[in-house]
Amino acid sequence: MIGDKKIALITGAGSGIGRAVAYALDQQGWTLVLAGRRLENLQGTAEMCEGKEAMAVACDITSAEGVRSLFRQIEVHFGRLDLLFNNAGINAPYVPLEELSLEVWQRVVDTNLTGAFLCTQEAFRLMKKQQPAGGRIINNGSISAHVPRPLSIAYTATKHAVTGLTKSTSLDGRRYGITCGQIDVGNAATAMTQKMSSGVLQADGTIKPEPTMDMADVGRAVAYMAGLPADTNIPFMTIMANGMPYMGRG
Image (cartoon, rainbow, N blue to C red; front, side, top):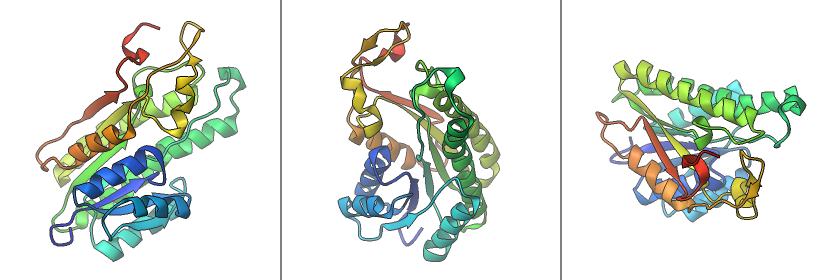
């Protein structure tokens, strides 16, 4: 914390939900560290925010050394970290399970699960030693952390695993004042969900359009979770487009 400013790291901050969360946190006065693969996209996010202290860092979260370098920069520049939003993630092509290549499977696992673990590990190291100690980690799960879509085994498996990461992080962080929760988002209007309006494969084999929701509402939800006092946690929040088939039987 610098004065009354709290420091937040957002991965995958160059677009989509990461950008929406950055904007929402900026509105609440957080100082932002924006991480992602493409520096120009991160700079675009920084320009959208009103705060003048956003730091953009190009980082591949699948690289242990890259993540260590990111956290070294945070420690040197700010001296602490109050929030990590593990948001970076990728999907795989919708192909039959038996046709999914090991290379694609590993890329999804490395980004969605291992990347989140590496960032969590470095956040723990910093949050335990900073003064005052403690902080908050929020993981971006998904409706896919609860139920799969057809032909989505890699994405679904990693998002179920993120739930385990959240639970273990929450338990292991208790003694250090490190809180961990998860937001499970359904059909936010991002580049990943553009096809929803024209129709996507359903469990019964039909193709149907699905409703989407404004990313800004996801941003505000994460900002609410982030702003809770240290003695309060939302372990899991589900936020979804009203009318999407999550509550149906498929």
